[in-house]
Length: 175
Image 1 (cartoon, rainbow, N blue to C red):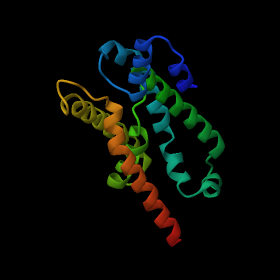
Image 2: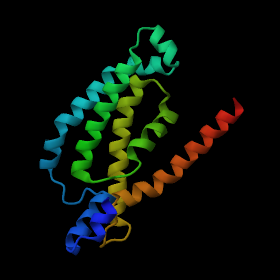
Image 3: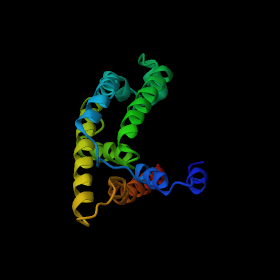
Image 4: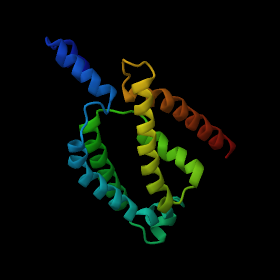
């Protein structure tokens, strides 16, 4: 659908703006944008953190978690809705910045372990740091021109994601 709209749009400036949004970026963002999204993002992070214990129990498996009193289906729906809202709010301001939400939590899990009481705040901080680092690289790598942040995160994220897939496949084959 996006390709159809881009190909059939007579305004080349609109096409360029959409392509810039699709590749994500923090350029032209102001503190006003931060103030707009900070409420929903922080509320979402606190909601997710409130389920850290349940997430830890869900690591034992769905049946085990249910037998320990976790309402797995209900919690999944709440967490999916919350994560979707956080993602939607962030993307509305920055555009699509690929792989940060997928790769950073996995990287942090390798570093700090799988206890969600630690993993959730460390992943949030790690995501912020990696985004700032990617933005800095995007601004200086071909200065005075600027790459889009989404390009930088894709160059790092895609290989790491492939590594995770291959590593998980090996582990599954061993079982």
